Each structure stands twice: as structure tokens, then as C-alpha cells.
Length: 360
Image 1 (cartoon, rainbow, N blue to C red):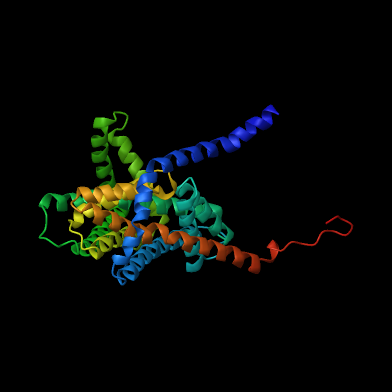
Image 2: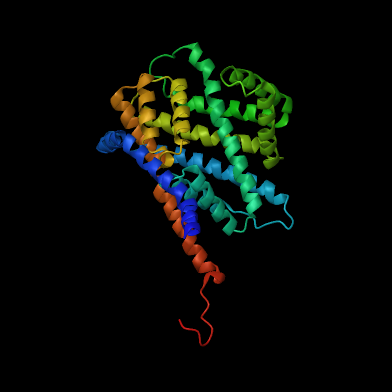
């Protein structure tokens, strides 16, 4: 009994702690969630044509992620003998949508979504090692782009505010940023010395607050991660950099469009900083998908950069509607469709009749 009890603790203890943390987190952010939900009727004031615009921008962001996954899986599959089944667009999109939905509704966040995405890809015929390497490379390159964004906004912040009513330039800013990101990404993937220099400079800065981190250790870690990404997308570096940049920039453009729809006034560079912080909050696995924390944090940040409190609340709600809430039912439908397809087309899943003489 003691062993069984210990096994139960090991099996369910971590999950219980995770659920408890999620419950406490939801309790803390409950007022902001209720406030956000209370503003839903205000979306009726937004001109209807903005909704398809936002949906198209978010779809483009997701499509860029599918492209990135296709590139990574194709590269790793080329190294396998015998070569595995080619992953089609439908399979990749279904796996990503289902994993994304799970990360937003199940405690564990991105880890849970990644497991589900990997499972669907493996069931589709991709080797487990290929899937693990591809998803790791995708996580590294997309996180790298996110970390690069605030650095790129510093010059724009220092230049000073543009003329009034220039938030629309945020859509142009997203295009310019994408071009710069692609250029820097290709430089990092083709010129290792550049990564070493950046790593050493970063290590010196971090060493000031954390003495265990040195310039050499930071550079070595950065080069290791760079090598993993370079190997994952070898021969397709420009496409990988473009897809990773497009994934973030289309999502940022959706936030800008949500604010423009409400005639908000803010600097595109400051909105980009608010966007980066919101994405960082979404990575904190306290509530699924950063529910509540991202909404409250993004609303507060928009107010800090000059957007009125009322507009910031509705803008956050409009953006989160297409980037957080809408993908959940879409992902659940994708997962359900996948299960039905597997049940219908895979004969091995059909139950065989019991042997003669065996009780049913």
C-alpha cells in the first residue's frame, strides 16, 4: 500500500500542484477577466469589415508557422533512412491548431500543446526523433525572433514621436521589421562569428546582475542553439527566417489593426514593445495561454503608452478575440476532424471480434 500510495503521489502530485497554481492564478486575474468579458457588447461599435481583416492577419500568422514546421520536418526527414511519410499541409496545420488550442485550455500551456502537436504528427507517420528535433528548432527560432523585437525598437523609441495619427504606420513597421529580421536571421545562420560576438556582448551585460554567467558561457550557449537551428533548416535558411518573421509580424499587425479600428493614438514602436511584453506574459505557465495575465498586462501597457483606458480595454479584447479565443474552437474542430479521419481510414483501429468461446 505504501508503494502504491507513493506511486499515486508521484503520478498525480505534480498535476495537483499545477492545477492548484492555475486555480490561484485564475483567482488573482478574475477581476480583469470579468472586466474584459463585460466589455464584449462594446465590440458591436467596431465596423464589421475590421473583423475579417483581423482574421486574415491572424490566419497569415498561423500559416507562416505551418510553413516553418513544413520546412523543419522536410529537412529532418531528408536525413532519415528510410525516408518517412511526407507531412502535408493539412496534417501540419491540424497538428498545430490542435496543439495551440490545447495550450490555451489545458494547464501546462505550451508544453501540453507541444505534446499534442507531436502526437498528431507521429500518428501521421513522422518519426518521433524527427518531430522532436523539428519542434525544438521551431521553438528556438520563433523565441529568438521575439527576443530580437525589443532590441530593434530601441532606435525608433529614441528618435521621438511621429506626427499625430500615425498608428497606421504600424502596418508598415511590421513589414520593415520583417525585412530586418530576415536579414539578421540569415546573418546569424551563415556567419557564426557574428553570433559569438553577440553572445559575448550579451554575457557581459548579464554578468553585471548574475555573476555565474560569463561572456564565454553565454556565447557558447548561443552558438549551440544557433547550430541546432542552422542544422534544422539547412539549405532553407532564408525561407525559415522569413516564416519566423512573418509569424510574429502578422500577429503584431493584428494588434495594430485592432487599435486602428478604434481610432487609437499611439506610437507603433511603443505598441510593438507592449506586444513583446504581452507575448512574454503568455509564456508564463500560471494560467492556460496566459489567460487574464496577458489581457490585464496588455491593457495596462497600452494605457502607459498613451492609449485611453477605454480604448485599450476594447482594443485588447478585439485582438485577443482573434488571436486567443477564435483559434480554440478552430483547434478543437481540427482535433475532432483528425480523430474521425483516423477512425474511418485506419483499419487497425477497428476492434477485432473476440476469439471463439471467449466471453464478450
